[in-house]
Image 1 (cartoon, rainbow, N blue to C red):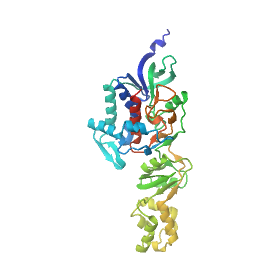
Image 2: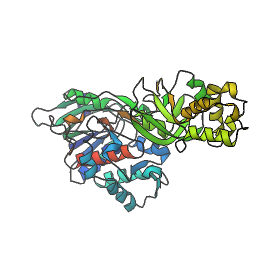
Image 3: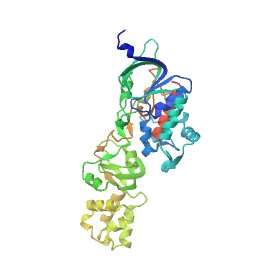
Image 4: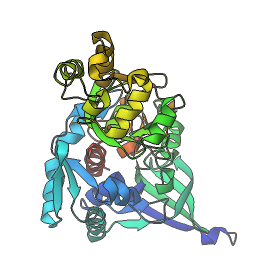
Length: 410
């Protein structure tokens, strides 16, 4: 035996999980509570980094109202079995049993009152209590299925120490390409392809829009301005806050619709979702004919936005009283306010995307167990799959539900 090979730390476990994020930890503690010997290998220097930064550090850990329609997948029915097996109420009951204070925000989103660390500690404590071993800063270098046992063999490095692990079950919980600084990677897709599974087209999701046309300076000038809008693209509609940024548009409304947007698509913004803007400006002309249009609009829209729209749409009549506008002009302005069509040049990409759209094709995966049908013992959970939740706690609920489902059988 060479001197080098004696340094390789060899180990055999029942369940090996690649990825110590939300789904990986959930799967680990579920499997360990069944008496399985579980090892988690995490690429980053500590587990659960994305949990800690989520929800502005408060972790939007689930939603009271979770339906299949809150998820995007080539197979819209795929999520149903796992979501039924482990529901938001199951997770909420666990949070309550720990005495973790939480609050409900709009759209039934649940957040920690204190810190996302409460959720991570809950997961890590359960892992520790059930004997899960977690190793950080681990880089996988090779992976193979063993012909004799049907299990898996992985070799890699932890710092400068080599390791080799054999496992009966292998769970891929490596996340996806979003926010690479928190440990996101495409490794799970490589594993899928290695074993003959398809990966659907990948795209940044829940991500801000950028503009290169005349809207870019407009957005820059309005950076920090926020308002509630209704946004629509490809037949999907969301009513949430829009935030102008130095690069374009963000805020929950934009993040939600970005999941449906494709390059080249336009997006329609209703800046006054509670008003028929055409009727509003026509009535204002009758009631306040001597007022300036911007004065009237500043009572229902942010001042900076009104001035920006004025410079685009009625600059030549900026100082004219409303009575000087004809009906056609006011109808055009009203229509703009209820249906402003913008065309993003692109998104900010994976650097700021909260999720990755697309992933391991679910047709090859059991919706009940998350096991690859053609590769016994291989499981895929969480964001690596072609399942993308809306903003609002749905991606975490998918992590809990898919991790739990695999943990029951892995």
